[in-house]
Length: 114
Length: 114
Image 1: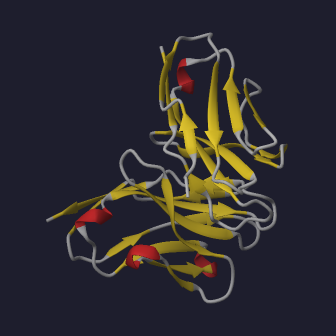
Image 2 (image 1 turned 30 degrees about the vertical axis):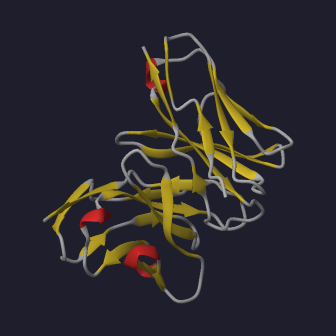
């Protein structure tokens, strides 16, 4: 069965500092990988996705993520955090070609301090 | 372009009652998925409908059911409500077909069971 682990429940960073959110997954092969962001009172928005190819993927809002097969990880990064990045971040996986059944991690809540 | 619309946004029920939630996907989207979001559990997949057929189903009891209409609108029903069913229920739509990662989420229906 597929599963996703986000080890950090809550992270606090200063505005302008760099950010890395961790995500590890369990799956027999390489799944499709995603990061979503949920702002307070809103639905989830796709930040970026990885299907195949270049293991470093760029997303919206200046985010990027790197797929590391050997570590079964797909960590999200941003070089310089803005106050508006404060939100809940979810990593998700899906098996290729099986429809839209996504497995989400429990999320990481990001607080940005001035 | 209108987004995913979920109704009602908030509702309160008592144990033993049943509830029906509605989701109108983005125009042209044929896949609708439902997720239950609770603190500490993240998002858990309920089921996915594509072209009026249930394509995937999560590990929820039979009290949770859904359907999709010919216009792609979807409903989910929870019968014999339990306190543990209190959650935010999110609907997500997609063009359909194979996994694209482009899930578009509604703002959710927040269910409180007393």
